[in-house]
Length: 196
Image 1: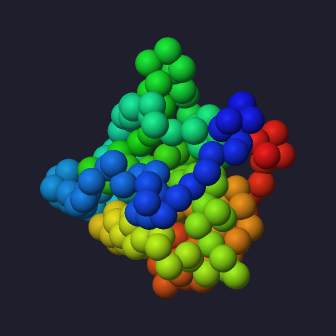
Image 2: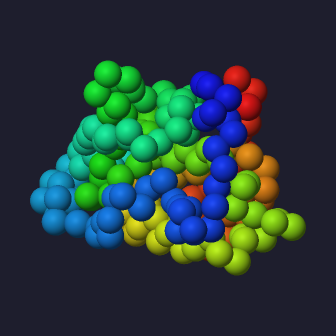
């Protein structure tokens, strides 16, 4: 990580709508993949009648790995995502591993815990006095992304959960309150000294 990367100057003209996941577009939740799986799961539960078997993570069969081009991301953003999600990154191709469930993207995936992960590195620069700067509209994109994540959890009968991790304390505090209405999303302050 270079000093240039640490000292990027963010401006209203260039970064007013910055949210690192905006390039994902308007992802919509596609529940068609779970229809057949849900039916076979119901039949399986009726046969075995074991409660543990019936509480399995419904996200596992409908989650897949994907790779995303991150040539415009800073080294801090890339390394924070790798730190939180333990995902692969190829610097030669500038591609990072992510996961898709019902056509919605997540930074990381822990199937053993039925847990999706999201990493957010440097957002405190968009806040003043613990509130978003007037010119920054990225909080709307954040809310839309969280809504998509919750819709995936709802479509899968609430079995998966999502943890959003923030590198910095101000953005963590703001989004912890903003996302408190999403029952399957928790927000965490997870600093990483090696990135500061």
